[in-house]
Image (cartoon, rainbow, N blue to C red; front, top):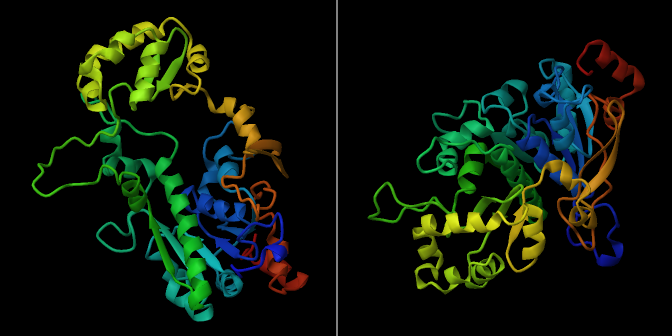
Length: 402
């Protein structure tokens, strides 16, 4: 991989990570989507699954033939299934790792050594390998071998307690936010390790955990000054006005923290006297007196629907009518930014899905393609190891490769 290619020689449509080979042994969301983010940037990603497949394939889905979640987090990868309990499959993986730039897995810390794929073992055969381990809690400490899941970590780290109302129970944030942020850390960590390798010539271990992800997301809250009591205000929901509000039809999210936006909100809703009242002339004051302000605002918002208010506020008041994810497929701004692509899958058929999370002006990534069917590209990947068709057939007969 070369990071200093002159502009005139940079291949178009291949992405900044073109030429990087990634082996994705991970399952669920965090590791797999991190690898999809690398694929979006041009990396050649091979998804390696066990004989039973990635557990995400079995998640509930209204698609009969495949899991919607699996398709969504595994785009632009080639698929290969290996039974890593068999020595022959372990050797194939080592051969692949000897030629790869990156390997990502989400095994518990004690598992890789048993399979012969621990960092130290693979480093001996490929000193340039970037080895990314995605865990629940890290690779040290009393919880290192405990399985980690998004909403478990949300609950453990205070996210749910902060999300809930002051007088109510904790609330889960649905949408796997910890997993997806961990995926971003995977892509970021791997990319920076590849950059460092250009200077040192050496690979390294990269550790990402759901615990790190959950706490990283709360960096603005995770501040405890010397002398402060345990229970201090850490709520980032500023001003008492910021949030979802009911309208005549539907809900509207409003953010009016600056003096300009606060004045515009009051003017647009006919509440000019609130803007003129010195009791409410700062974010902190409005937070203190939210019980006086919010009922007035809710009464005023009943005059129109959420979409009507959104149009009326325009650029003067930051807001959004509450929509469904279905609305995003044809949303003009999403279309204008090229965030939806058409995919063709050998089992599901044609479908539309998200694409292009990052925009590159000079080195745009390759066109995305559908997540692989189970072991869809086994023959192609094994052929790159210069295995003959007879050798591949023998491995399949032994069920080392599926």
